[in-house]
Image 1 (cartoon, rainbow, N blue to C red):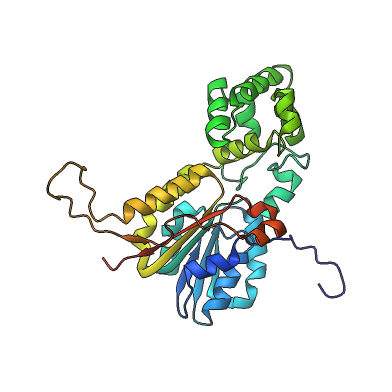
Image 2 (image 1 turned 90 degrees about the vertical axis):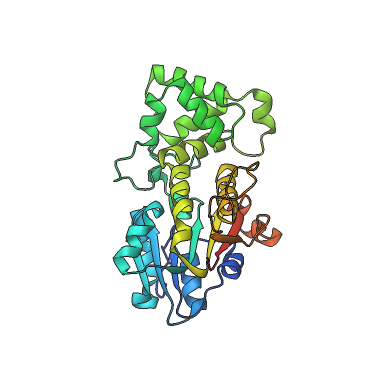
Amino acid sequence: MPGGQDTRPKHISVMPAEVLHWLNPKPGGRYLDGTLGLAGHAGKVLEIAGDDARLVGLDRDIQALEEAKRRLELFGDRAVCMHTPYSRFEHALEQVGWDLIDGALLDLGVSSLQLDSAERGFSFLHDGPLDMRMDPNSGAQSARTLVNTATFERLARIIGRLGEDPQAGRIAHAIIKAREDEPIETTLQLAKIVEMAYPAKWRATARNHPATRTFQGLRMAVNSELEELEIFLERIPDYLAPGGRVVIISFHSLEDRLVKHAFRDAAQSCICPPRQPICTCNHKALLKVLTKKPVYPSEEETQINSRSRSAKLRAAERTTA
């Protein structure tokens, strides 16, 4: 920023070259970025596609959306930003009068703005209120409410399934016990409870902070992240023009599995029971899977951007059916 310090949030897009390769933006194309974030991917898509291309960017984080709007100002009316979850992309496309699109992108990672803002409560690296809602005005239950009211069974299920933590039972028990003494209000308070729930040997040898997986599971539960993805995957093939592509970057094994199976199922020409001798379903393949296996970030990228380490990219293309 000339004459002063640039105070804008710093952000490094994950797998930018791979996204452009698989999305393959073209002049005059219409594109959807369902997780706009700070517009790193969106800006590159519009830049590569040229003057006639347009993009609709969605985000339920109003803070990120305002910053994305500033970053996309140079593209004028070619970029339209909307405050809405990506599961409601159909309504967004209807607002701009688009029936079909040439490409759709999801980057399911948490943005730098969310992780680095203590008041948002996403990270145990900064002390702040235990919130974790991507849209604090959505009416969704905060992480604080969840942690202080959920049953042992629900907490263990969230931490075990969404957080994929083998110590889920111990951690859930520790949370229940701690909140009997006082409400769990802050990120560092919860992180300490989780850390002390870990066996001493595990704490000593853990590669990451013991609270990492618990925070991941709570965030995914608070924001209904798997449910959002399921809705999107079910509906997006119908909105892709022939040859249009969908590219999804996930950071969690459950997310990647959902994407893998949805792409595979949409690519099948028959969905009759395996033992049925004659096809009666009249099903047509909607997608062609472009990535038989997930695409990973390069070693160079993971060294520059550690947050990209767990990223997996999958892509599919709309058939002409």
